[in-house]
Image 1 (tube, rainbow, N blue to C red):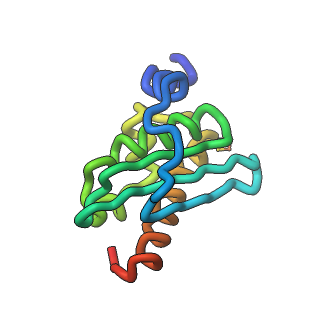
Image 2: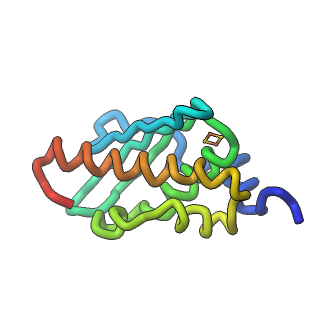
Length: 127
Ligand code: FES
């Protein structure tokens, strides 16, 4: 079996939603101290729904694939659903990651949750 699924390779080679949202409503930046990789998520929120999401990931292929898949999973979703997104769901949507690469999907979960918290503190609204 190949080390990485076709979906991981696809999202690594053709990442979706890369970039910056200048007037984002919530921004989350997280890093992994061990590998040094950094992920930043930008959320545009309208009526309690993720209207747009973009990311910048300075990291490994699995982190790029995880952020790309995570943005696809939350785009158009209500914030209550986004709140429940786990790294496991991201990894499953990618048809799995090798065990020692699971921490890369954790960055995606953490970046999105950090962006939600930023949105809460900026807007004064509870998700
Ligand atoms: Fe650090 Fe993948 S090796 S996020």
